[in-house]
View 1 (spheres, rainbow, N blue to C red):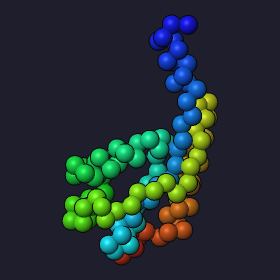
View 2: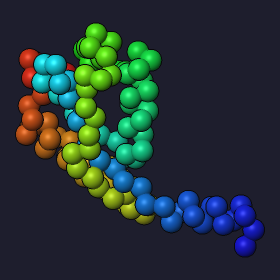
View 3: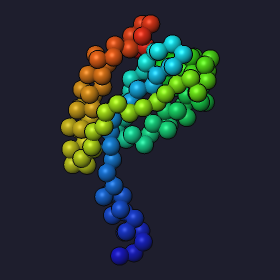
View 4: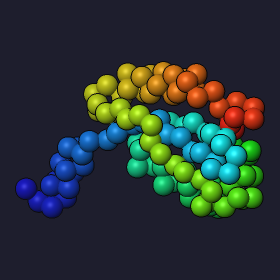
Length: 113
């Protein structure tokens, strides 16, 4: 097997994890709940915050005000992505995120939603 084919095969065999994550402001306890089909992209979320381009303006404003060291980013639940059941996984992920939103109630003074 040539190197290119080998790399393709390794990529196909890599397990991708989807999941729900929480960003917590330790200064005021506010919480942001998000989800992603690939948990490796959480670094991209932090990158967006560091460079002022996150879609949630309230979170972005406080990230700028308090600095990145005032926040914790953690995965609260993982979900394995099955390549042949992508849409099913996406639907499950949406429900998981809704469950965490109901559980944590990150609205108003409690969060960024």
